[in-house]
Image 1: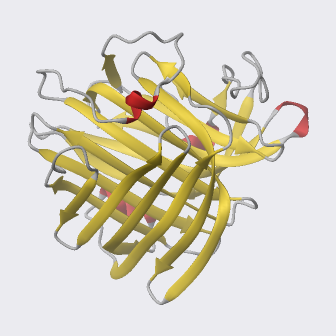
Image 2: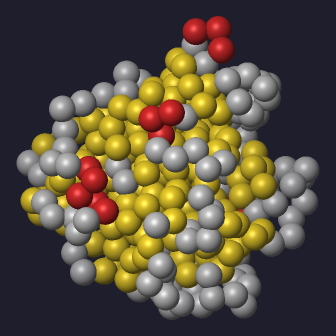
Length: 289
C-alpha cells in the first residue's frame, strides 16, 4: 500500500477535531477512511467495517464482514456508494444503509448497518466474483475507548476499544461483547502500487498493538517484530515478536479506476505474544495482481 500523508504533528495528542472529515487534497486517489474491527474474547466471532471516501472520484467504498467458528464468510463490498453529505458519515446504496457516528470524540463511536450480504462457502470466492447466498447482515455496535487514541503515522491514528451491541445475520440475533481497534486515516490511498500489510489486536491482559507489515504475503506466516506499545506503556515492546495464527479469512478484491487489481487478504487472527500472552484481532496483507 502506498500512503502519502498530509502534514501533521505526529508527536501531538490526537484532538477531538481530528475525528472529523478532512479537507481533501487534489490527487484523484486522495481518500479518507474509518476502520472498525472487532473480535470475541475467545476468538469465536469477529468482523469489521470500513467506510472509505474518495471525494475526487465522487464515490465511497463500504466493506463489512462477519466470520466465526463454523461459520461461512458473510461479506458486504460496495465500491460505488454515493458520498455522504456534509459532515455526516451516513451512506446509502443499492441494498445497503449504514451510519457511522462519532457519539463522543476520542471516546465513543457507533456503527449501524442494514445490508444484503453474500455468504461464501469458500472465502477465496471473494476474489472470483462473490458467488454465494444472499442474506441479510445488520450491525448495531458500539466502540468505547479503553485507552487514549494514538498517532500511528502523520495522518493516521488508532484506538483500542471495547465493542458491544447486537449483530443480525440471516435469522440469527447475536449479542456481542468483545474487543476491537478503530483506525482513522487520510491521504493518498493507492491500493495497487505496492504490497504491504497491517496487524492490530487486543491481548487478554488488555494491552493492544497496531503495526504495519511489509510485503508479508498471506497472513498464515505472519510475524511482526516491531509491534507498537499501547498507550500507557502496556503491550508488546518494539523488537518483540507477535505471531498471528489465522482463524477465519475475510478477503476482498480491489479494482482501481484504471482496471488494476489487488487482493486484500484480511483475516481474524489469534495472536501469540512474548511471554505466552495471547489475544485476538485482524491482519491484512495486500498483493497487487
